[in-house]
Image 1: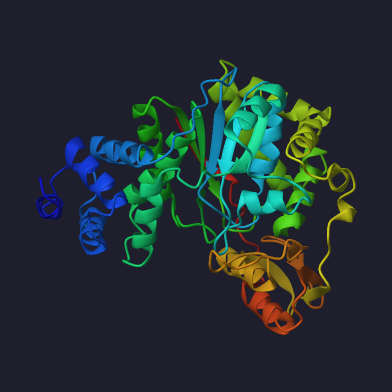
Image 2: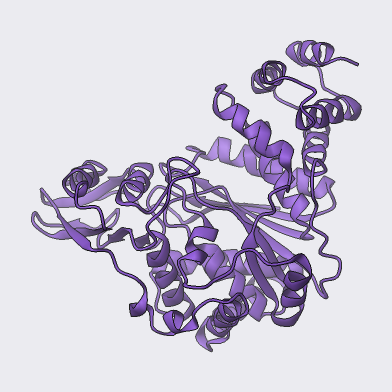
Length: 433
């Protein structure tokens, strides 16, 4: 078996077998296969796709390429959630405590943000003292004790994915559904949870721009999960406008607290109820209506919020800022963006708004960039709202006064105002089991 033969086979549209897949995955991690050969194979996969068995074998080989998290010592059913990335998506901070308060075990490893999609770990680190790196035994004990732990991903978790993704990024092979699916699911399988909910974002702020491609990705990931003996479900959700009203790390933590206290914005609250109820369905034999009722009750009676406090305390965070969000660090400058015409907000370029939050200091363009936890955007008006010229439609938070004028112009350019009221789009498009 040679890499040349594997590339040639895939170039002609033939399915690779398990041995061939394991050969190139482990060979690439061990640096026995050069970048130029792997890049050629990735392009062949991008052009010709992969069959389901082939894709599952790729995912499992990538999951087995490094450390795997053993959650078998956890007493109870473990559940994980993954979002394909969006703007203002702070749902993990909300649904994790909700589901844990209802008896499921949330042992979750999350990542940092890069580009316009925020990272859960950055949001958690905006809470003073919150420790995202704890020993495995302590993590397991914490999950057994309080039902939840949210930590940073292991440095050697699915290393094949890290290497392959870096190569995809510079070889125009990012936009391949099989490669996206295997990338996401290899990390989820290596993370160890028995139940997996996949939140596949669709719209102007997501990688998947249309329902057809979002459905294809969701179906492939659900099938991979099932073939890997994981109880898996996917939900396709709207990312044609930012989720909630706040974008940026400690701003999103504050909004998460609002939701957990029953005071959050409607779109974010409704989505979190949907996600949490799906996670509860995966862990139990309860039906959807019963799960929704339990989720809503956990918010109404304060048990979900109490569980979030427990999580923060367990991982060393300053719970005073949770109880009193006004204590979070604030930006030096707040720019009020005023509407330049009257009409309905017809459309929002969500990815553009996400990039503006990066310019303000809330995100990274490169892994080594330092983020400002207080920077971000408050949305006062969103798609479908009627505004008058001069109305304040957003507030931009930053400590960099050199970019204030540019950021304001970019924000105004990211929204489309029309005399016509836009059609209201659903928050949830489809659930795939």
